Image (cartoon, rainbow, N blue to C red):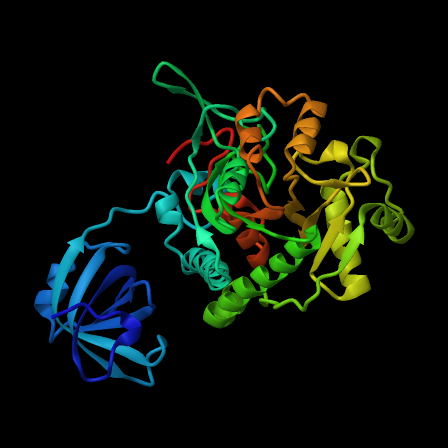
Length: 429
């Protein structure tokens, strides 16, 4: 007999179910077990007189053990678990659990020591299902738009992008580095004739940062596409991409998210509002008496991002807002410039930057000049080769999948959102 998921049980039909014993309640005449699998949960009811052998077998078995039952599901108006209960005929104990070393009241760092136990809650299970749906919605959208999924190397010979904040590793008889992003290889794919590409993969940042939104290893959703006319084409595509991802999440889990996380999944309207950085500075000053610190002029900081989201809601009634026209000193050398202004943007959502995107500089001479200007021409020689033999105009961006999920569900920290968190002081489990 094949295993049946709990939510697929039909009344009166013999079935085999298995899962976690979420709770075990022993009364005078009955033994009740709340059995949970990936689809849901059900009450397993054992009459002690009629099921004496099974009850004896369960003596000393603790909650969180893995149990398998055969029997029939029946409907009952007296049962709280959706009006359904399972009446077992046989039992198999698949795995006995010891007393758990943590509970839901433990602080996050203690829970992370036992992350596989911490993730068992309904809320945490849903969190990861939501992330999967978000990525699936975005991936499906891009496939329909003729994008090709690629997989770039994570071990590289030179420090990626800026030449700093990377992890150095021993690679046989020489040094190698963990990729900070797939940026250079995405552009190599454009130069190879693959006009539309994306990747969902790990990225590594050697930043000794302990904020709620930074981590040393994360999952990045990157894309790049050719023959654009402007960086506005890149913003247009990101709008469609995020709407596709959020729509998928809302369809599959909207009600569960509302029940467990007390938040609604909002599908944003197009176009997203857009504002130049200098105009934004003026609005933040006029509305909230906020002055950008001197060292952040030409860029954003965490406080400015929070106020920018407040401004977007008050002015446009929108959760998202694009900010453009950053200073060239604050942007990567490979961003195209027009009148000395980088042709790129940040996208702010719920008080946090989720994307930096741009039209890339595809002309070899200009790119070489901009790399030299930042003192990187020698460090990125291999990258510059991609543009010597013809490369179409193109642009793209990256989104941190974990940060997206954190913001969507209103989770306070990446520590709690990520499947396994990596930070400056955490390398296990």
